[in-house]
Length: 458
View (cartoon, rainbow, N blue to C red):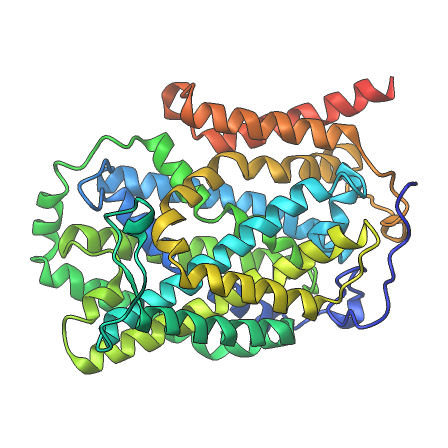
């Protein structure tokens, strides 16, 4: 083995470099609330807006939107549950469990991608929070910090001093709580999660009523089309595939498989579909998928409630993004002899993500960001699922996580093939019957992994 053993002691109080023993597992209720809070993010509303054709773009009918949500969230549930069960039974983070299918250094390929994705999500969510506070406060200073038009993005509003400062302040707040660890994620999620869901449902009803009710809603949807079911599913999956893979790093703290299933249901069957539907209703009824932007136009009290609830809800998600980011960068660096503790990594990524979020990463890149995610990210999970369930039959030697070879060619090759096919299917060679590119690429990856592994053995 070319890589040295990892130091599993020291200051790693979140088991960044070792499996979580059963004695350190967290209460099921706490973990489920983390998943409710984790699942509550603006992308749920954004996806609803995309499905509704927000901004005079192609969309899908309400019936097709429901099917896209059912099939997309159903697929995410299966992927997340398969990964989550493996994490719960082994206690391993994504970085550690990937070693069995990719190898110690081979795992750096998917883990580095996940590190970049979670950093992008952290920057995006920080930007979302800053933008909503900017809408609430306005621009009394009259100062513009950065104008996207200066680099060719003329359709994007300038980043005012107020938006910049809001991003900066809340980015630091998110970083501090992620610095603390899994207990901070629970402490924030438990009181916030039920409240923000209730607000979303109530406001969704208010937007529907303002738009003229159900009859008016269905009349307005008659001309929506052009996106197709396959692309709609890809958008749904792309909005959450990174979270599905990240689930490994949260589910390793679960006490039972039932706790894993409860977390999956809380996020993908309960929380996210509600947000998708509210976003769709808002985009059609009042021309705005973001219910907080709508609340800002009603009254000062409603605006304040909306902005505070929005910030609190995104806080829970951004905590998880930054927390998991450290669990990716740490093992990658450690495999090359660079040992930094988790909290140091959180601070570094938090500061970088805050800067990106303050300078319009969300406004400029987010729409393309989640579409690309939906095409090449799903195959990341393919080798892990195939190896754990099909090859090893759920029988991992947990003590051997640092004794794997540097590379398992089957994992690296099957992922590269799957990711390339996902990208090709989405942008160059559309699949028949409108099949979703990312999910088809994932299935192909799962199928070819054991074939390649068996061929290499021969």
